[in-house]
Amino acid sequence: MRDRLTGAGYAALWRLVRALPLPVARVIFDRAADRAYRGNGPGTQRLRRNLRQVVGPDVGDADLEDLVRRGLRSYARYWREAFRLPSQSGDQVLANFRVEQLAEFTKVMDEGRGAILALPHLANWDAAAAWVVVSGWRLITVAERLKPESVFRQFVAYREKLGMEVLPLTGGRAPLDLLADKARAGYVVALLADRDLSARGMEVQFFGGRTRMPPGPALLALRTGAPLFAVDLAFTDTGTVAQLRRIELPEPHEGNLEVRTRLITQRLADAFAIGIAEHPQDWHMLQKMWL
Image 1 (tube, helix red, strand yellow):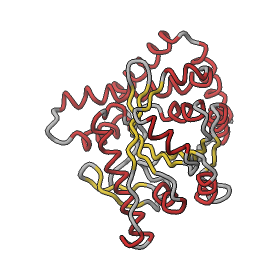
Image 2: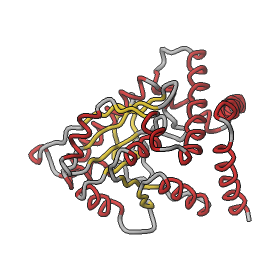
Image 3: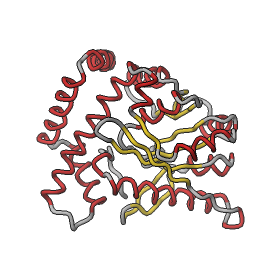
Image 4: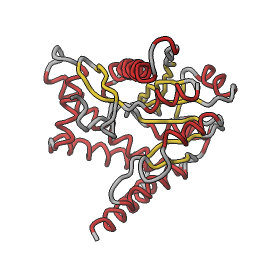
């Protein structure tokens, strides 16, 4: 019964937010973020600790608290935009999203080898995927299997409505094999890659501490030869802007598969850190991050 109610609640919220005028939705979500800040629950506390690791000890407590407040508003904005994204036209998707390295990315896709996009939880990653699809390229991603199952199915249906192909992280064919096939077929493979969900991640240095990140993007790049990009996303007043940082792949003589995978995963972590440091308020990491 509880799972059914949760699923029904998500579905109702999805419909309600799309029906609200945008200024009203902004006010509601901003107030919800401010209430979460005042409530100082576990997610807010974890965000504060994560942002302290990012900005370092020299940033004063008052500035850190301002950053936490802005971070929660940014996270609320992600959800507000995500709920409303399926009702946007293709022209609206293109107008609200900008890629700084568009010419380079277009050239890569024209070569037909596909591309692997590794993204941290920055700004609106669903808008990035929608932009890829509206621009005429095929995209596949992996979805964490949420509970209850009805909510997971709603998120899969939401992303499929945006034009993505969605592969469950568990419960089916090994994701890496299928993703490699898709990359070879010219797909964009988009993976959130700043937090390990499997307990089998590669240990990396990240903002002066140790954490684990998934090896999937590195393994896919090595297996397929598809170009690998770290994607830096940031909110603007009117939309989202993306910076693409191409990750250099090591040569075979630089080590065995595990060594090269670790090198690439660390390079991804370093690239993620550049973007997160530039706009930490848009990093939506409310879970434990560092070891």
